[in-house]
Image 1: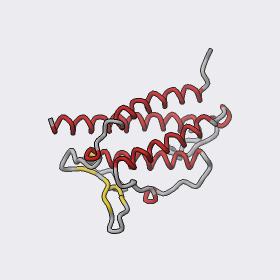
Image 2: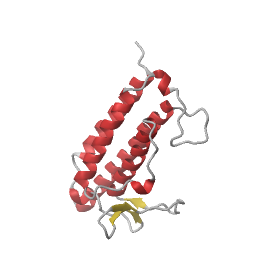
Image 3: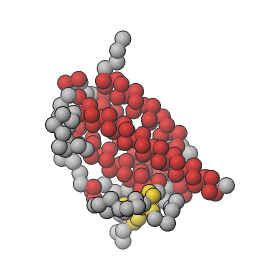
Image 4: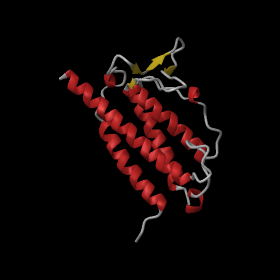
Length: 175
């Protein structure tokens, strides 16, 4: 029996999420803001206590190494916007999506986004997967919601690998 595209996307997401949980369960509070290099992007509190990411509208060269805090904000940002698009809502602007302020809160935020995305993904029909999507690719008329869901899986897998590598580097540096 062949799986539907939605089932295939769900299995891929489930595998990636299980790898993410492996790292999430092992993160220590001090892991989130550990700066692995002199050139680093992180999240920082503003004077009013809102945590915002380092950002540039043009990609710097060289690209700064992110902290785990920055990567968790990044996941929260793109995943929130993907959910907005998939649910037909006006997507939030990058600056509207802030980091929760500590690692445990960030983990719970991401777990909540995972639940929200599962509800979106599990509710999609083949016809809905064929509908045009504009996130994150806006200029490709053949880009569909199925493509966006596959991108979510790919982007999450990349970010999970980054968090895992940063976690292991910090642990090795402390040993």
